[in-house]
Image (cartoon, rainbow, N blue to C red; front, side, top):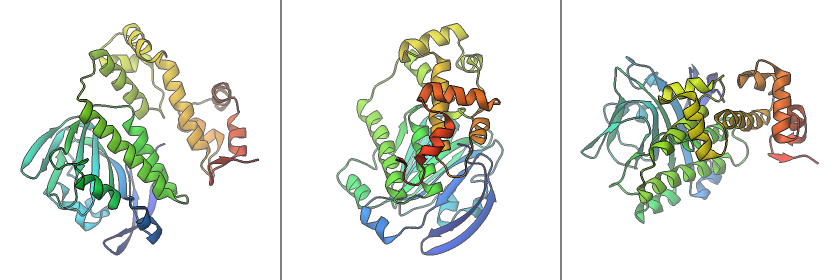
Length: 322
């Protein structure tokens, strides 16, 4: 989903409440209020977002829209929460506790509570970042038991197709805020930590072709709302269209086209669940100029038309109505 919108946020942090209205271009973020019920969970999502920082832009952009403790990220700061920051495009630098790391696309940073740190993109390149902040006894125990460690805070995971959808689900939960949305958001945080720790413990180095397929999936996921041709991806990967298609099908048992269409259908299912969305709007948002073609395609993949999907699904409960 494209989260570019005009947003009124009620920001509660360190006991302060702030109202912010911003027009975000390809950016989304929330700083979340925490209830007594949330505290009982032992897992709390405190903030999440994504930001595109164009080249030659001071970092962070729109600094004043963030609570004061978060603003000095480029100079150095200490937070009382955990954060995971994933950079999908661009380059930069990450400094923490006397160590410095060069950030490339696919790098993930783990920020621990009370740990001094700073990070920022290279001024000439900018970057595209995703982040989520969290706290709670569950995560504190992970740190105390050594599952999370200050000795391992930087991960060169690569451009993994699995990570962006996880961030997307966290963003959806906190944007809509259905009942018990904190459980949904924190389930996404656990999935991110699992991906991070699995990569560290396996220590595997994927083959060249596996990397090609993972990067292709990542590009498709990022551009699921656009019209994307096979030649677009193969050119970006430095392969001919026929060679790319052969490699992709070998590793996935699907052609790139069918994989991309399936991504669009999955995204359409989530968009259609949102209250107030229309089939026409969802069709256009996913790059289908012909609403009727989209409807036929959706039904062929799911067995039900988009209008019936909306009719029988209860978005608030997330269950089929009887």
